Amino acid sequence: MHVNWKKGFNRVFVLVAVGWATYILWYVPVKQWHERFDMASDKWTLCLSTASGDKIRVAECNAEHEKDFQQIPHTAWTDFGWSSWLQLIGIAAISLFVVYWLLRGAGFASNWIWRGFTTRV
Image (tube, rainbow, N blue to C red; front, side):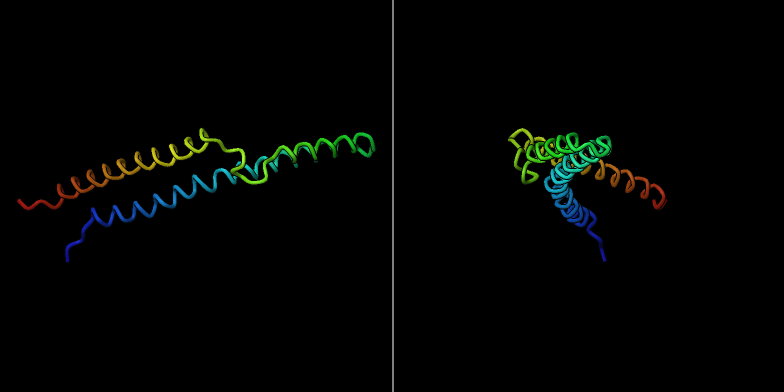
């Protein structure tokens, strides 16, 4: 039984490419969005801890907290412009292209080395 390595490798790469593109286009913006929430919450916590019961300072902290949370968009993709989308797509596509050819080269080199061990003289 002959194994078609090239076709199998390409199919595995397509599955990995879909997973990578999903990660770049979905997870990265959502992660950045959540980091903005975390930074605003940490800032609010620090402000409240330094207020130490002063009602005026607590009210200022709460007002600043509301202002910070209103500046965060409602979804992860609300403030994405064309440049942000093109940057994400570029990162996904270029990195996949580079990884594909690096893996092809590694496969070619491995095959070449293996043939050196298995040649019949």
